[in-house]
Length: 317
Image (tube, rainbow, N blue to C red; front, side):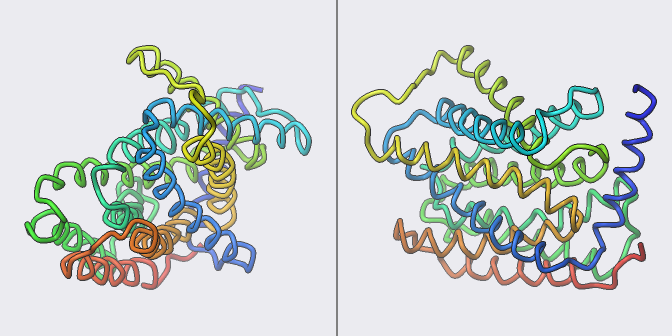
């Protein structure tokens, strides 16, 4: 019923706010580490796809479509297809845009232009950005320690963008700045999930709705740009990467909704610290990325900012 949509939204906001400072259980900790690995793998898969000549817009489309098929199948088996009330559709649209369409286009576009380890540093800004947004939406009070963490994280970003020796080539600065726009979308998405998610509906159903919106939007982008790709040419490494990306996205989208529901966006934001460490390690191991002292200093500063933001005294539920 229509009146339930609004009250449901209020209940979701209240639950999401309390969960942000709840003590995580063992299941939440496991999900956090699995999701961190999944996030790091996204950057690696995008890099491999770009190296194999896959056009980035169709690559994002096929990732979304494949993940959607998996999630819709699981939803139909275990709980029914996603609900179609406005309260639910609103979540699909917001999360599909912020968590898939915009950031995946950004990452896929810059993957071949910037070392994956450097892009992973941007993910470390999500926790401090989530706190800044929480202040903006009055989900938390101002705290000097947390504000200091935000400033420290920004200094870490400047270590990446400003010194000419921080990147393999100075002309990468613009691409890195564009890549860092994606983490802002992730942070805003986490706040929106906590505030807008209705109390009814499973995480699989919400993730399926997200992929539906992402698939449709990417289909429109392909039509406008005229850039098409449908597993052309002999089956090779790029095709395998696309299939792996489909399964990885399905897992990641489900865990995003489930982790925020269980422990809130503040705890969820810690996933980006794990993804950063794994992403830098994979970049060195798989691609031979060379990270300068500026990059390692930035990682230390951002890590310290995460401690200040997430381990300072918590707001009472």
